[in-house]
Length: 115
Image 1: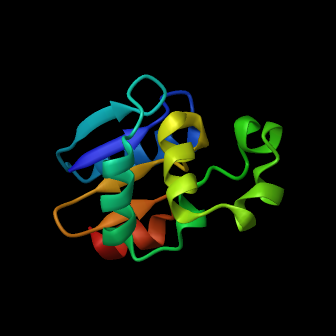
Image 2 (image 1 turned 90 degrees about the vertical axis):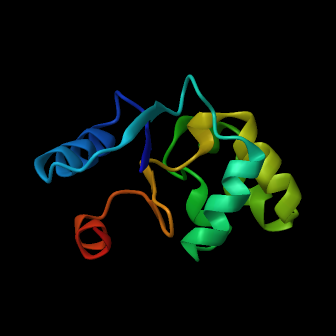
């Protein structure tokens, strides 16, 4: 599995502790220094079954500074993927990527059901 997080994020720290407590093996990737590519984001989006908006870190400073709550509705899907790929801090985290699933954000009950 691939665990994508921002190391200073407390939610990511809780998710990591959840994985570690269960002895699950994963590769760690810091979203700030190793931004997801557009191709990765498209793949994860398809696997997740979630709306694309769920991939945006709507509580983040970058999201608010760029006023994306106003701009996203008029943006195309291609524009949204390009924007997400341009800055890892715009992407909701943590993300856990498995062979046949993608979990976005940490909700313990969702992670427990999937893992």
